[in-house]
Amino acid sequence: YYIMNKLLKVLYTITSLLAVYGYTHAQQINILPQPQEIKISSGSFTFGKTTTIRYFDSSLLPSINVIIGEAKKRYGLNFTAHQSYMIKEGGNSIHIQLVEGMDNEAYSLEILPHKIICKASGKAGIFYGLQSLLQLISIDNKKAAAPCVVINDKPLYPWRGYMLDISRHFFGKETVKQYLDVMASLKLNRFHWHLTDEQAWRIEIKKYPKLTEIGSSGSWSDVDAPHAFYTQEDIKEVVAYAAERNIMVIPEIDMPGHATAISRSYPEISGGGEGRWKGFTYHPAKELTYEFIENVFTEIAELFPAPYIHIGADEVHFGNQSWFTDPLIQDFIKKNYLIDEIGMEHYFVRRVCEIINSKGKKMIGWDEIINTGVTPKKAVVMWWRHDKPELLTQSLQKGFDVIMTPRIPCYFDFVQDDSHKIGRRWGKAFNELHTVYAFPSGVEERIGKRDKQILGMQANVWTERIADKGRLDFMTFPRLLAIAEDAWTPKELKNYNDFESRVKVFMNYLNKLGIKFFN
Ligand code: TNX
Image (cartoon, rainbow, N blue to C red; front, side, top):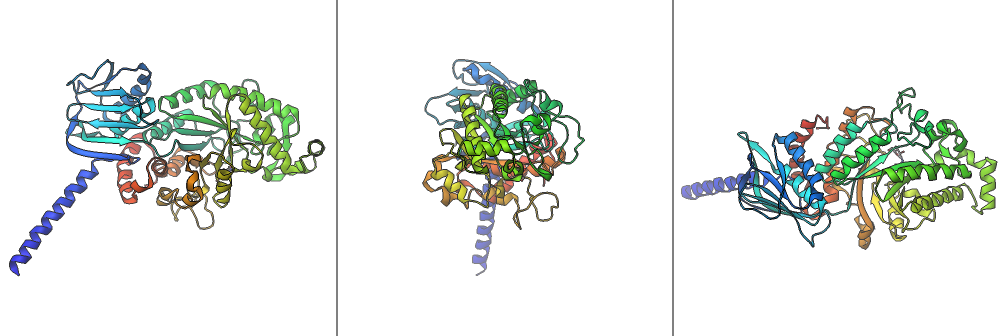
């Protein structure tokens, strides 16, 4: 009995030691979002003075330079980039290779004791391989090292998005750039910029200067807030900054509702609205309105290389009261057999869609667009009304490509803890980190075999109740990390406890940036 007991104790110690070893071993690999395949081997690569990034194709240089900048900022490392034609052995280098046959945005990263090899079929994959490498670096005794691994990775969805509303409260280009940095490190690739709304119009349009001279003042919390908007130079700068980080910038110009700032600037194209919704809409029956939209989108299309323009199209019924009595609108409805004010709204959306298509772009709209008569070739749907999941089903059945961003759990203006006072709730529901992490479970059955039509998902930060940067950080992080993993990592590889431990490591980076996340 005594011997048995001793043996058991020894066995117990060995197993726990093994468990601890396995634990710490697995702990070293903290990549967020979780890669598809990681093989761990022994040893590590140590970065030194001679470590250079070797590449051949010069189109890769802008993204390589982003990584060099990040390595400096995060770890004080001074990499240089060298164009070279072959993998030279030794030299402690990072070798970049473009290869054929890998999926878009996929990469492989092989860390060996004396060299690192990053392969992909294009810029995006190389950039992501190097982002994973950055996350693997740790500093010990002033030496920077990365563990030896082989990673084969690719995203689950092509659309991994973040939306920021800078109309309700303005956030300048420096904040946007900082968020683009974090997005890039999380392998998020779509920045949806909500540029106009009731409170203000925030983008310079040369043909209509009053949009910013008049329409850019005020905010949700302060009608007297000073003018704040992006010049076209600012926009170009941000779009280029994003492109170097594999991020497409999609502008949203909300219409025919949420247009109060336009009504202030150019009352001749206002379609009215009552009470709290005074001036909420564009006038849908005036040629002048469509001329305005056409001209605005000419400038927008030139500023944003993205193949999409988002027109919002949500919540028109909030402020379409004047449409019921406006003689021009009533006349237009009769003459064009539009039946009623909803028919008028649908006409508006179809017509704007034609304008966007004529610029060589696809339209994106909130889920209100699915019954307007625009077709899946011309438009993409953003499903947002979580309380109407049938709209997801209908969009898919009608053949639309869909980006999923249901309020629960994708709206980050909702609180993330029951004790939080400022922020939205839907009945008792709100968006905790683990609720966000569980997405898209709950809607998978609706998607079924139509998963090819799901472009991906997106987190939206509406800023009615977010007036400053600290608050914006607090509402965005760490939940953005969960969306990033939802959009990148297949369900079978997701694990909340493991995710949480990686979130803790990622917080070091957020701290370094001075981002005041909810801890
Ligand atoms: C609904 S989402 C809106 C926004 C608000 C948001 C607040 C959508 C298409 N419209 O205008 O800011 O709720 O959560």
